[in-house]
Image (cartoon, rainbow, N blue to C red; front, side, top):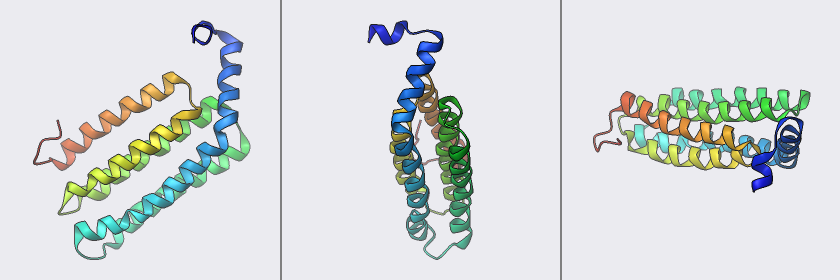
Length: 159
């Protein structure tokens, strides 16, 4: 561990690039699988709305366009800084989309399932990322939860 902390410059970039190269397929598959699973959360939306809310489905499908962009960039470059940043942006976009969808629902307690799911996805995407990127993304999750509390006003007091 001490050797890793002492890395600087090109050696550090080479290490993180090789780490990303090892996990890049896992990263892309995790994003794709979570994107499709995110659409399946439409079933939870049905329980919250008590009827089929097609706008909710459209909002969830909109996220697939971001995953398609990641797949296109994935074919063009494999630089770890670009791909890790883009992956974290997509995961946070899923979180923001979950806030957007559940803010219109009469029963907002189902937002917890989406946040738990996104926390796991964020952890999976962090495997190939540098520690600094992962820490910033995890703190972003806390800020996303604070944002959701300000938008949805949880009765039981999230914070």
